[in-house]
Image (cartoon, rainbow, N blue to C red):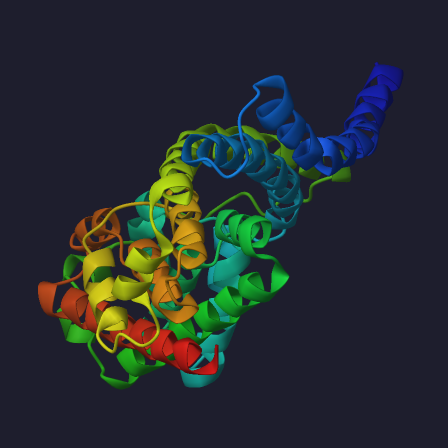
Length: 344
């Protein structure tokens, strides 16, 4: 029995080491294979609209899935050290600006989705986490996640990915700090303060093989959910890549159009998409002439202010607080958009 257990543990640890070289080989040869398949095997002509669209999809879709698989596996392991209970304890007692910074950083590495908004909010309120600190976490967690970072890196490189992370952190810290200073606790539904939630029991000690299993489970759960959004987003992006004239997009979202940034935020707020669906489209917008700041503002408004999350948060927040949240975050996104249009 003991030998079989040891072999199982070794297998969980050795398997990633065996798969990693295969991953690198596939990733390295993906672009030349795509070039050969589209322009040699299929006999399509480089530069034609349909050929460019097909090339874009066949190259980008597996590339993104490969990056997602690797990064989500690593982040899945990291997340075993950041349970919701530990996150609450880390934020408990933190005040004003320091708490906003810590909450925003924790939001990057802790699991969060729209369906988690209420239990997380209840847990934070119960343990005395200030409202502004709570909102810094709730903004950073969905906006700066591993899916967004991987897609941005895969399509734009590290420079844009780091820009997105830094500006996302700025917005989360700034918006949370402003909301905290406004003292808006009166607009939280009264039943929230009367609720007592059970303590999380997942802080038990885990051996490394268990953490690796969490990495595998994260791949199955996250990639299993987002691959269809990746496919749809890249398919839309492929069509735009092949057929949308650059001049047309530049005329709508170029850096010289003064109203482009606030208009893109207003358009993005009511839309519903996750990072997997919107980033491939943003990639093509930039390629076709849309400015970086305007494109980032549009993307952030879609991800950070999604309609489903606002509907779910309505169960614990009154409408004035929700509108204040949307307004403060929206202003932060607009500032970032103009700033990067000015710099770049």
